[in-house]
Image 1 (cartoon, helix red, strand yellow):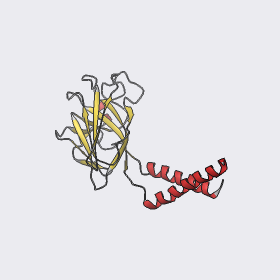
Image 2 (cartoon, rainbow, N blue to C red; image 1 turned 180 degrees about the vertical axis):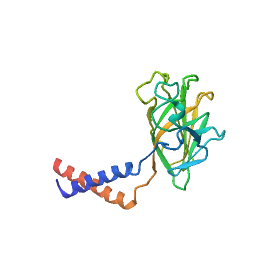
Image 3 (cartoon, helix red, strand yellow; image 1 turned 60 degrees about the vertical axis):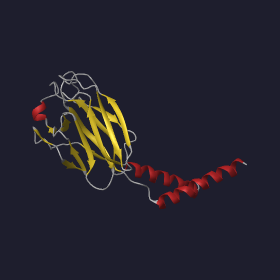
Image 4 (cartoon, helix red, strand yellow; image 1 turned 30 degrees about the vertical axis):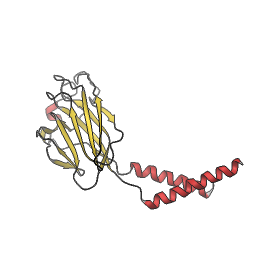
Length: 208
C-alpha cells in the first residue's frame, strides 16, 4: 500500500472514530434508591431532565416487582413520565441522541406511540413518531420488556421533548445513548481533503 493510500485510510479511520467517540449511555441505575424517587429537574451527564407537570420519576425494581408483573421491567432502574418530558443541555454544548429504550409502564393504559421533537442549536427542529410495542409487560418474560429505538438526525440538539400518545399512563424510558456533538477540526479536514484528491489522481493515471 502506498503512503498516500495509507494516509487516506488513516484519515477515514480517524473521522469514523471521532463520530463515535464519547458516546455515553444514561441508564439511571441507582437513582430510584430501590423504590422510586423524583427525577424532575435533575442533571445526568450534563443533560437536564424536566417535566412541566412535575410527573417525572426514577422507578426501581422494588416497586415494579419481577418480570411477570404488569409493570415495565428490565431488572434495573429507569425513568418514567406521565405525559411529556424534556432533555435539555445543561451546558453551552449541544448534544446528540443515538438511541433509547421505551415501553408503556403498565398494561392497563396502552401507549400507541411516542413523538420525539428535537430542537437544533440553529433553531430548527426535527420530529418523528415512534410506534411502541403493544404486548403486555406480564407477557414479555424474557427479562427485558423494553424495545430499543435507533434515532437518526437527532444531532447538535439543545433539547429533546418526548410526548406520549396516552396521557393516562406512564411512559418508561431507559438507556439513552448520547454524545457531545462535535465539529471536525479544520486541520483534520485539510489533511483528509488532499488525501482523497491525490488518491483520485492516482486512479486516473492508472486508467490511462
